[in-house]
Length: 474
Image (tube, rainbow, N blue to C red; front, top):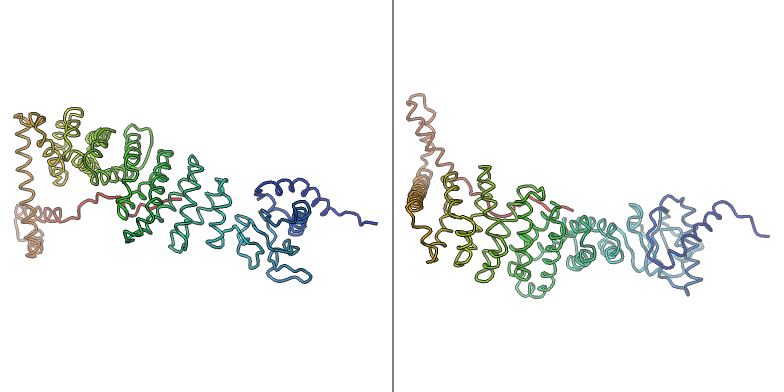
């Protein structure tokens, strides 16, 4: 006579009936089972394994997400399999696969795990295996990428390029998952960083890989232009490519330009709210692209709206009377894309009222030497185009230009003498005069003014590149 079933065994049979079809036919992730008791969990696991052995021709391809049974880190007598999960002690052979990712914080760290492939968080191999097996589950992939990011961030990853390929595979499958794309782009930033100081032979070997990486970043940015962390990660990654592998930017030149211009247009039209530093960074990246091309590529940059967005930025900050640094980057971009490109010069003068904007900037920022230099450089490009010269040689413009050139001359002359005063230790003497009780006020004011000019001319120039401390986000 059979013993009566107890409640635990009744529960096992009920759960097995419901869960076995899932486990048998598809990749089942069952985090809800973490609430089961250790004994209940182990009994269910034995039942599942027995079922698969009986009905699936002894297969050991068990795709199981195991639950919170801590098991024992010791061998239990009467079982042939050494396992730290009690429910697996009944096995005769190793499983082909064991899913332990996101089970509990100790799951994949157990000592004896009888499987050929194991997902989990404990080792790099487990994390990469997790990314491969769970690629169809975007929320889980995002979680896995967070673990992978830590390996990249600490420079402890041993297989960065293989992991990067899986990251790109996941990003391609789930383009419109914002969190996944942001986490993936954070990982790819560090992949690019690994190409620093690599030989040309190595870069040639990874030519297709780098092209695919750039496209993955651009696709992610294009799909999530209103998400600041994604844009930040993308700009930082592209900027890093410009530093380490500049030739590879050309593999997706047009897409790079279009994505950057679309982002800046959204910023200008107030369609999206972003930090101002992102505008500065986007302009800087676009300017770097413009510096590395000529001819037809510069025409393309002008044709798709770069001149209009640069002028829009300048006009916006003219109204605010602030952020000369961003205005300076915008004028640098205009200077670069008009160089030996008559059509872009024409767009600046005829289509965007460029000379009026030039005068407005001079009226507000005439003392900004680097800015004025960039503005004059652009007009030098315009002056090289014979058909446009008549716009420059009017009495109003000529008077403005001559005054500006004289001012610039004195700025450079002042810098020369400021350098001489500093090299001769004149600042000490000027300080003594400026703060002496024996000197008259006019003399002290002149000394203080001279000191201020010396400090102003010797301050570090405003950086034109991406802010280095603006780190990636996951």
